[in-house]
Image (tube, helix red, strand yellow):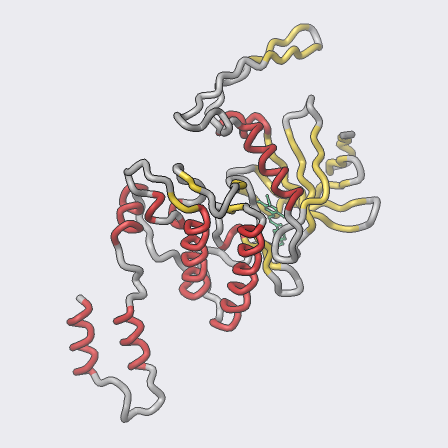
Amino acid sequence: VSISETDNFVQLNQYRLMDEIGKGSYGVVRLCYSDFDHTNYAMKIISKKRVMRKAGLNLFCCLLFDNFTITVMITSIIGRPGDNGKNSGLENLQREIAILKKVDHPYVVRLFEVLDDPSEDNLYLVFELVDRGEVMEVPGKPLSEQTARKYFTDVVLGLEYLHYQKIVHRDIKPSNLLLGDDGRIKIADFGVADVFEGDDALLNKTAGSPAFMAPESLQNSRDKYSGKGADIWALGITLYCFIFGKVPFDDMNRMGLYEKIRTEETALNPQLEDLLLRMLIKDPNERITIKGIKILVKSML
Ligand SMILES: COc1ccc(C(=O)/C=C\Nc2cc(OC)c(C(=O)O)cc2Cl)cc1
């Protein structure tokens, strides 16, 4: 990887890096332009050190002699029982890249190239640019029902493809759904995705974003839970976000949030829906009255 800092932009091989267009726990995504094919791409920049640290690896120590940097990687993988160390940072990264190389579907983001200079901390993933970025902000402006249904259908087909390929995504949420100029959705971010054998992934650790975690993944029992089922739950929370512009379960405190996910009925309970429908009856003679509303609300409380 030849890196040149001329003027005020970075050139990586044929790619000229431009504005930052995405940011997350993984690192940043920058818009980049290729001199080869005169096309824009999205470049995800991942710090290998940060990935290692995040995976609970000990620090490596770097001894500097003269101008040589002899990096002695003294790492001890703090594996959790049953992890058999597969969660070390670089294994995570290799798994993510292997999955990205395997997927090929109109509703899943496409990886074109990986630029990895062993002597460099950064790893560069070159993706197709999905022009309009994240489908929506959460909390944010709800989508119209028609738009919500359109996007939801794309995600369902994209997720069906991933499950068919024996991949569970494990972090389905609006910020990982990118919107193209063609109005189609692409599922992105396989940072915590997993491949499985047989009919389903049997998981025992949580992953992804707390507000989208399935209740069965938050039980204190050691029982394993279905990876596909957890993706479907996250898809449900995502659809709720499309319609209401916010997540159904929220709490300042992580434990409080988990309790709500485990126990609280989804705010859109049938009675609320029933009340809404009765208030929105076109025919005023059929429409619910204040008296009727008070009876319904009382039965809801
Ligand atoms: C306003 O215009 C915009 C156009 C494109 C973007 C954009 O692309 C953002 C994130 N992109 C990505 C993120 C990923 O993970 C977190 C992955 C992955 O790891 O699969 C791939 C991509 Cl592309 C943003 C704004």
